[in-house]
View (tube, rainbow, N blue to C red):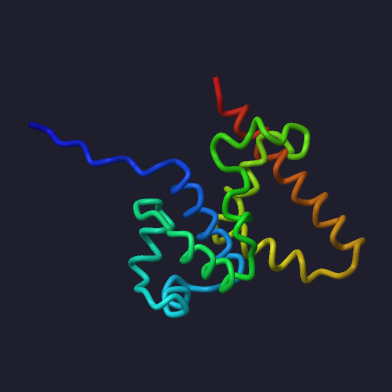
Amino acid sequence: MVVNKKQPNPIDVHVGARVRLRRTMTGMSQEKLGEHLGITFQQIQKYEKGTNRIGASRLQKIAEVLNASVSYFFEGAPGEEDKAVGLREPNADYIVDMLSTSEGMQLTRAFSRIRNPKIRRRLLDLIRSLADADGDDDTAATP
């Protein structure tokens, strides 16, 4: 007899991913967050993967430590898409995907330190041209 492990609830996975995103945005390690909560970094890992559900009081404490509202962790949650049509950019998952990477976080932090609007615009133009060139390379390689 094959026993399937229970799959995590999509809401738990989403909330965990938002905890990870907020934690990395603040530059906090799993270990440090665990210290603030009185739990191990392994438990933080389980929360972030959605394998362990975060209780209400624990989520409130996480929000406090990460300086976020509790509602932040539910933004864009599965099943929420239909409720706020027109209030969000459709398919904005790429933002969360980018900010979930080390490079995306580094880019965001560095870009936010640039004060001169002309330099920011020129950098944006450069990034767009690189993205266009990279896209051109992809289509050229495809038969």
